Image (tube, helix red, strand yellow):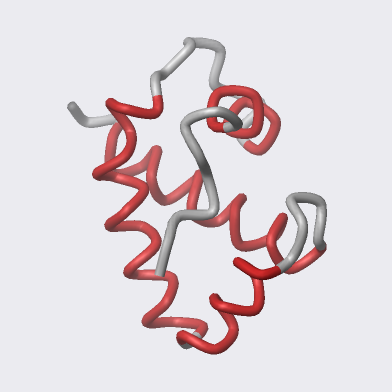
Length: 81
């Protein structure tokens, strides 16, 4: 199980999903929060559903939806720090 974000696409996609974030948060700083958010999401949707989203292209509907959930939950975990 990998992450739906990569170091290369994180900043642009993160800001796209969470329009209220105006700071440039690095992938390195958010990675652990994204990993926890991903684990929580997999518990909810199941490994098969997550694997299907991983296999989709970046603009796939399921991948977009799950990426937005991971971004929001990851930010919720990160923000208090």
